Image 1 (cartoon, helix red, strand yellow):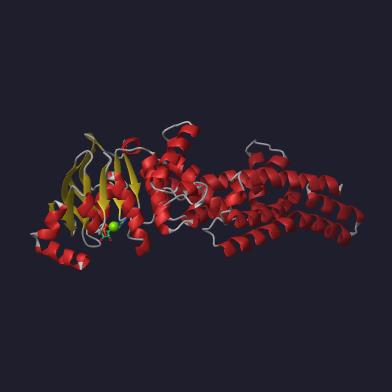
Image 2 (tube, chains in turn green, red; image 1 turned 120 degrees about the vertical axis):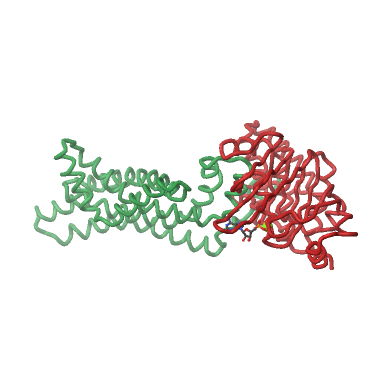
Length: 220
Length: 240
Ligand SMILES: Nc1ncnc2c1ncn2[C@@H]1O[C@H](COP(=O)(O)OP(=O)(O)O)[C@@H](O)[C@H]1O
Ligand SMILES: [Mg+2]
């Protein structure tokens, strides 16, 4: 039973993370564009989803849309709810990353004739990723933990399984301790990796990519 | 090749370029000098629309440069070398040279690499093709940036103070590369205070002050008998 919930949590988290990354990159990029309307749209998205509780957003998807006649499976609601919510945070992370790239990079790209989309793709975003990987991983950790809201709408996720086991056996302690342990197993390695990576980046100075002459040369 | 016609540029209230009229012939080497803040960079940046003029016209090869066609026209005609190099730090030296040819000019990869190697050889950095920019000295980075400009084989190369950010001991290696280039039929517009370079290379020098072209002539004219007081004052500072 816990195994099932554990798997469900991983599935929802993985799909929601992908959605959050896609939304985060799209809105992060347009929030740095020159177009006022686009920037405004990104701003509204970010502020709205960051400043209302995830629980309410998920309840809205569950009940609100049902009233409007649109019935989504709990699984889909989990992916959408958590994905869209964290997309707002990822968007801010991406935006900060992009604005940390020196203006000269854009100028060089423009002077070569790259369009906005092209220089974002080939020049700005690849440099951004390296910088934002640690905060992005922390987002992934939060996202995994937040999939536990699904329990509220009977999502058959890990938290739901812990809830129902606890109430059926009336043995609350072990159930939640065990569930907590499973969340920890998912999150701790990610968080640790992010911390290590960030320390390494700091040591090497963010702008430096160490060059190993033997890495590419076949002759050494 | 390049023509600026009645170009004015405002940054907010600040009138930075005032009625600039300037023509650069094909293959000409033009050097722009002048005090800091006089509008040299802005003038050069109008030539590839990194800055759009507030009023006036820019023509490249007879075609007017506009917001609409700037990417296409710039892509076909001009390259730029910056004071701060602006190499792509996540790419190797070779990749810095091949990125635009492969992605924009749609050159096959092998051909782009062949070309890149040719131009790296010209700037004397063949052995650095797999290095990342951050491992190179300032002078080497700027030579890579020049090679990157060359690799796209444009008719025009714009240089905005290419040696101003360099340690004194590496300035000459960059100037030497630029002198070598000047033997080719490339149109070069160079903002610099290196009057020694101007004397060797420039067909014409213009002196800018406060957003205007104050004086122009052959390099010798500036060494021997500049007419304007402002020019004399400026030259006395940089020639010392
Ligand atoms: N993007 C900008 N925004 C506002 N003012 C600018 C900008 N770029 C340049 N300026 C101003 O325009 C004037 C001319 O600048 P610039 O062309 O860079 O001069 P130069 O290259 O001769 O030193 C300066 O006073 C500078 O402060
Ligand atoms: Mg300048």
